[in-house]
Image (cartoon, rainbow, N blue to C red; front, side, top):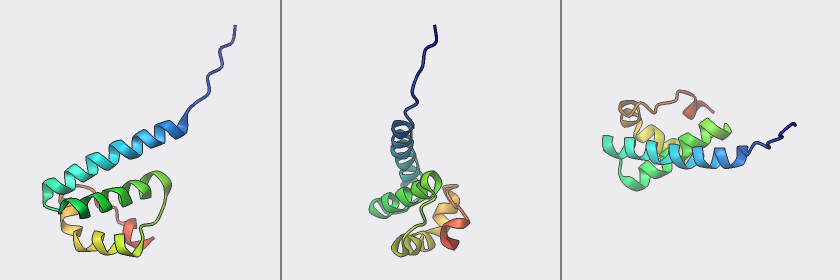
Length: 83
């Protein structure tokens, strides 16, 4: 008897997106990034990592503005500002 199981990648990606966004937000806030900016930056980094989606101009400005804190939080991605 062969059992076929269909993978559910969309659910896994949604869970990964949610989980990583929260983890990254916490790291950024802990390093001193204000909560609203931390949320926007965290989401931009996760979208970049999971979906290869380049950050918007506004997100790039936030990333640049808080780059030292991103480094301290170990969230710096060199391609974030290049893409």
